[in-house]
Length: 273
Image (cartoon, rainbow, N blue to C red):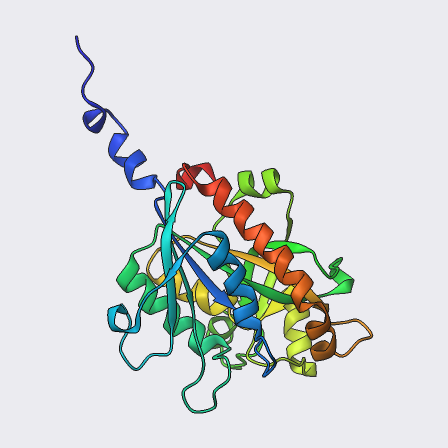
């Protein structure tokens, strides 16, 4: 008896649905008013490497007043969309933080329907947890450290701890470090934030990861978090000073890491990760 065509074989529909064909890269970072901002420093090498084109303003998939920027193109077997929040329309600085990240992720999921989200960016690392400048981490868990709601159940909601999408094969193949990511809207670390970060058992901290994870979970979209360490939060140097000193070098490290991730993903199924 002849075998049924591939589309009719058991499990074929599941395998097809599991194929990764559309990847959304959500960039995020701490911005400073310098010759080159952090977000631009992180995003542009990837734009060039993947040969992505910037979407013209008159063809934007986003609301006309939104400052969000999108690049898109074909890379190997994947269609890649790379988005970043752009600049605040009032203050003219990078739209950093959880609000911008959540809004951008929501709009991108709704319009682009990605199979997988990669949140890529820089992060502060903790020496006490073994982090060093230039390390690349694949987050195993994400949580907030500055949403304090001291009411039963609401306190747990505020922390918002959740697992990142598990990628054991990717982690082993690329030999990245694994660690927990803690997210907040401040560059510095107040004593209450530090206490929460320790409670979160975090190795790295950023300003958007947990917000991206929240929206991704809402719409059942797998998300992974690639973070390159620019500064040691519990080190001797001031955070902003160390961040700026290491930004260019770590940006190159981040670019290479994301390219490796995308190369690994190309031609694979979600279940292969």
